[in-house]
Image (tube, rainbow, N blue to C red; front, side):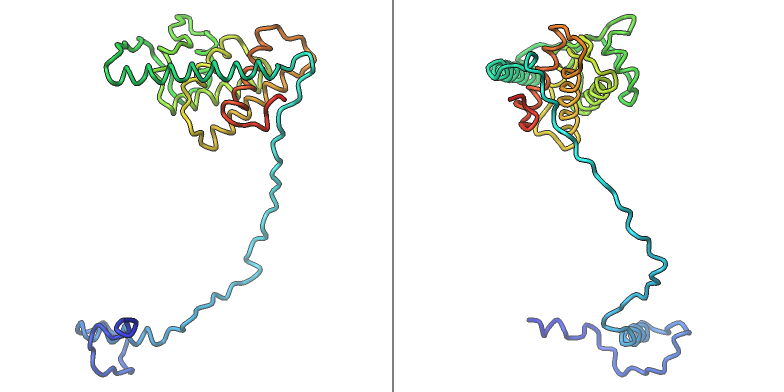
Length: 243
């Protein structure tokens, strides 16, 4: 089998190694002969002669590992039963939304898209203002009906904007919390690495806010505990979970 592969494809006859290679070949046969001559002049193994002074030394890069969640003060830590209930309830909401989408797609449920104008996806400030309700007309609210207008690229990008906002502001505004919950409900799985990192950042930011010395109202504390719980226990980032 291998011997047949070694047989020449073209019969070019005798080769005159004194052919003047500076002149163009006069025929196809002569061109093949030149190829054979040039191939015979090539070494079986080629090694590049590199000047060591031209090589750049590798730059040392240190990757600082991201820390887990900050432990909650005993008085603010949710119970395991509370966390289990929240995960179960969240799972039920996601299942309900999934069924609604299927019914809309199969025309079993009537759905009229809301008359809304969404900002450009790359306009971070416009999305933050929208989610905060700074739009004077306040057309867009964090409802499931509105969320059905979002494709997954929009869901992920807006969620990233909101997580960055929470990290910078070190607080969770009520409307921001509503939007984050709505987006988590319609976030598709499996998560890709960037989205997984975004959710982990959300949980860490919530734990830092919760551990702050300032007094938290019941509503904000509930949102902080809820997002840590969902990221850790529903989206399976268990190393971030409250015990």
